View 1 (cartoon, rainbow, N blue to C red):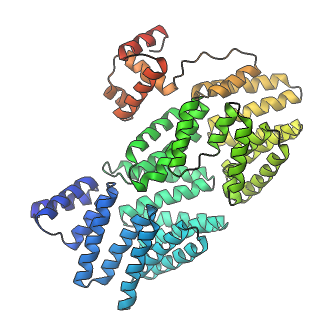
View 2: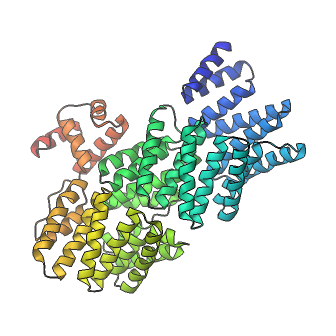
View 3: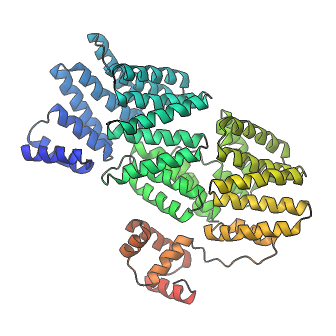
Length: 542
């Protein structure tokens, strides 16, 4: 047993989570583990994505501590058990363990830092139940306990939770300051991997809610470095891949974003990953919609809905793209009016405005633009500002005010370029072209359209490219239906490379390459790689 435990502890210290779990599990067969090793077993299982095994180990550690009379440590084990359950959405069982641990402390009248951890868990339960004010109060109390007992992990986690609640309570600047404070504290102190991963994901989600692309990019890059340093980390890898995909999507690297989504699908499993899989499905649906792959987009939006992610506004925009204006308008109005607050409606506003304008309801579009302007003014974030200016320009055009529309759209274009948001910048150029036409500037309109076409072609945004060409009275570009990345894979196939060699060239997994190959053969109606090679030679794709 000694050699096995030694190897397990060494693997744990190296953050080789699956190896540590396997070694500790093997050692436990021969002889019961000590509490320290039970805690290592539980943590390693959690980080390796083995949630059921982690819960079992935390229960064993809790019971062993209680048997030994170490109540505070038993409560700490119960906290981590509850932490996993609450984050998996199991509020009943998670809350039950919090209450059980609280009774242990109350019965013994013990004053310890674990009371703060239980307050943090109570904050999670309240926030996940929709009681944001109670969540804020609990997180604030937990943070104060962390400071009092000089526990940097508790203080940092609680500050981040408190920050999220303040954002939801419309105290944005205070909330963002606490997010930054908590993240910096975690990076500066020796805290557990479970806490670090959770904090990164929580902070990134908060930044995304606020349209704060720069902060989201900063923390996503940091999360990526942290995840990549731990090859056996499974728990946060899927979420990390989705955050990367969202950044790549915004910045116009759609092929790389699609690859990250495919990787995320393979990494996310179990109830902890369900909402993240829903986010991945929605983002994939958006990519398919924008590329004119309507059936695939429909399937992904359906999957997102089944996994708990509302498929709007993407699904309504898909209906609009396929000419079903009434269905699109009904869906987006339902989603927009169900959104409970201006911030939630802001995330639907661009789609809502586009669809209501197509449906002829300029007054509704104007109302949404005005509310989005209020939100953007309060947030003072470049993404929210650019989005507001773009939809404002669209409404002004519909109101036959091309001159002020041009002013708004030029500012929106500058904002998108500053954010390196290639697609949004190109879409704005289409609106600028329409405004130029309205004031009689045909040369200006044609320059904008000509500038947008290469961007749409590179991204595979076939409908937008066709619209731009139609504005220039150009024939539509012939399409084989392949994305740029699929054409790249096809070229490598034509050169005789294996999937492994292609994966090494493109810095993706072999499974991702295999997925691309399958899509290529299906889209081109080809039986095998040899036929794909012949196609590539015939069409100059090599």
